[in-house]
Image 1 (cartoon, rainbow, N blue to C red):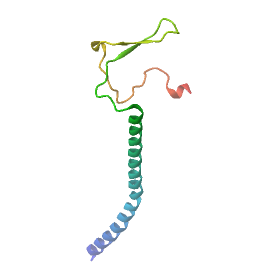
Image 2: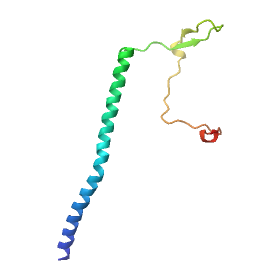
Image 3: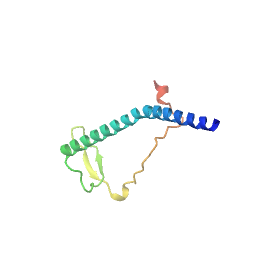
Image 4: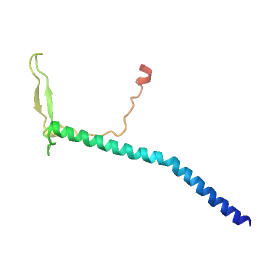
Length: 109
């Protein structure tokens, strides 16, 4: 008798609680869908307008150029190609490094 009552109680509570849990999680799912759709639409708009403004991206990027300052303020700076062997390989930093021993932003404020 006790086992039958326990099973029945468990089934009814599980049905009630699962409905409540789904009801609590639905707004998060709707928010995620709206956020993804909005971000995708915004990204596609930015890419489309960038292509419209700047044209299609080049298939190959040109050489690295260095800006050489002019001797006088009135003259324009010149662009000089940098030899390919002088260009160091780019390193990506996934996480920013903190300066050691220096002031932090909070201390400056």
